[in-house]
Image 1 (tube, rainbow, N blue to C red):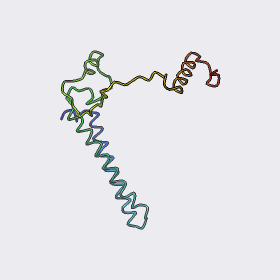
Image 2 (cartoon, rainbow, N blue to C red):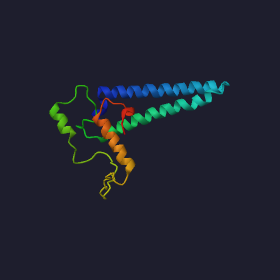
Image 3 (spheres, rainbow, N blue to C red):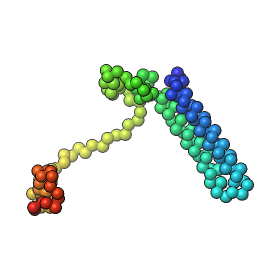
Image 4 (cartoon, one colour):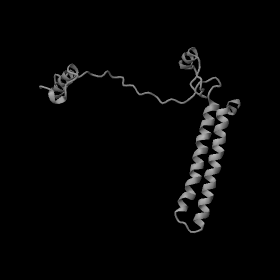
Amino acid sequence: MKRLWTPAWIARHVAMVVLVVGFLGLGWWQLSRAAGGNALSWGYAVEWPVFAAFVLFVWWRELRHTLRSAPGDASAEPTTTGPAPADRVAAATPSATPTGVRRPVRVSRTPATPVDGADDADLAAYNRYLAWLNANPGARPGDYPG
């Protein structure tokens, strides 16, 4: 829990409280205007509490992410000075226990057959064109002789 009482997190807590109270106050203000006959304010009366809920959602997600990460994890709390170069190398190595859920990587098990271009005249012509452009870097595509 000490990780949530750093100066950066205290600023996040204060910002969350100010934004949520402000957004809910604006929603109440729009609700009173809508009750007074302003039809457009009904939309804003719903919109401001949604903004407050979004702020709470982001704050809660970041809080959970910080609490789930290891205490010495470099990704848990960004620092302004940065770790020493040796610490960066150590932090870059993957840990034995993954902290999150990873998606599986789909790999094709059949080897890809290379296209030699002999069967496809258009592909062979395009490859010659690309080779000419590579050999003549200052040339424009309209200068191609073929």
